Length: 374
Image 1 (cartoon, one colour):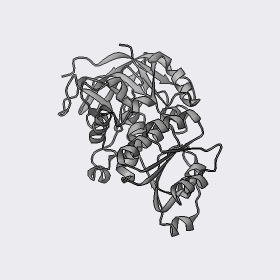
Image 2: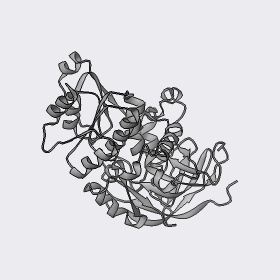
Image 3: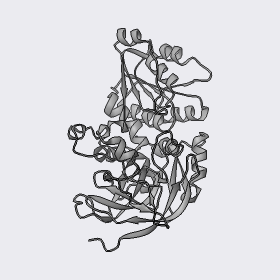
């Protein structure tokens, strides 16, 4: 039973389009129903946080962002059955659990996905956070809003992980890392001996490179314009790299792959790169699309190339992952040394959140992780 109405926490609040994050003392209510209150240990920063800050996705302000949180369960609602106080969890995306896609195990395509992850409130339109003036601050971003010292999540969206795992490292498994790895393993189903190309070698693309290696791809091509990222890609499992600012991507991939690749993944959100992704496919190849441009952007491709080549284009959300199953699998692969995603991250103190955002946007840091005060 809840003994308090709310507790004081610190949160990074965005109050205007493109405004900096400001650390504020706010209040968060106690968990209700099937909710859990998580003391956030660390949280990743993702490109999606920044495009919402800049209002390329229309989430209401003021708002607490953050959607790659990891922490410890501090309190549970009365309907929680699978989690307990003290459990270590990684928080992932929200879903309703009752629509047709959810019933068939495709939670990342939940009919309420946009509202539950980008709506700025719970399913009833209520916020869990209020500022010092008692005004609501929008939250429930990806069922968590983890740019805060505490976050309300749901039991379905909080994934229990082993206590011996490095909790402060695990938050990005809830979105960016699971997206890249899941696209390769769950969606594309990359086969041993196959040819794979990652168009974009950011955190998502490099996660895909590592997953392609786990899957046994014989050729793994990483494509980017940043030499340091391409060098890291070689260390993480790429067999070839292409600097898109120096080489013709389509021509070079076709040369390396003997006509193209079996699978490709576009993670840049640039429509011209998506076109390259279609063009680098060999016959009956599949392009996965995870990069998100601003809403309303359209891409073009040669219809006859798609048709006569039997090619496929597949949109992918959250790597088609059932987070409760997939995140522990990635934790185990990391423990075995087969999925070293720790190579992608740089830690920042929570109060340095704006520096982390700037470094991410400038391409200096692949995956920032904000550590809360101990």
